[in-house]
Length: 185
Image 1: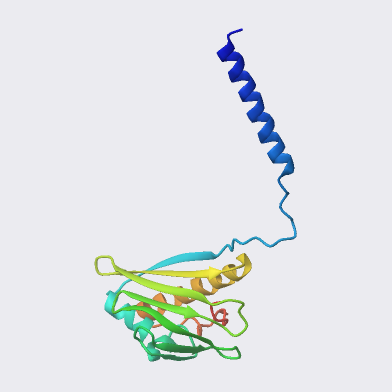
Image 2: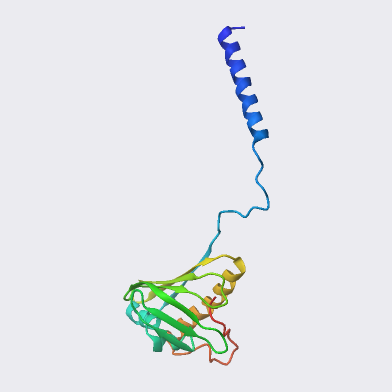
């Protein structure tokens, strides 16, 4: 056998042996240690509304109009850094701060209910679509799938209600069929 080939085989075997020893001496991860990675969940929902973005944005940023489709009580200071307070009947309020504000385009808020584990973020983004407005809502920052699922269910209803109020002047919260009266989580 060629001496170069023999040297290569010996070197290869030594490397494999060293790697095997390293694997056996490396301590195994303790299963009881919590992971340093946090998984945050988010959902994005969209609804197309038959009016211009300026009109839709008024329903997102004007306290009186917010009471017409979302909360029973609403106070919102519509500017970057402004605070808001929304309340639904027989429920604790949601409070937060405006983190992004671009008139007729974007409204982003921190979202914290007293019973929630963590603060989440809600962002409305409007896109004109030829005489209509696409409203995209992203709600992110959920630590559990169950909390995200509750929020999605609530937001779907409230986005449908926003569309109904703007297009048909009908508040689905007071319509004859039963509607969820819980606030988005």
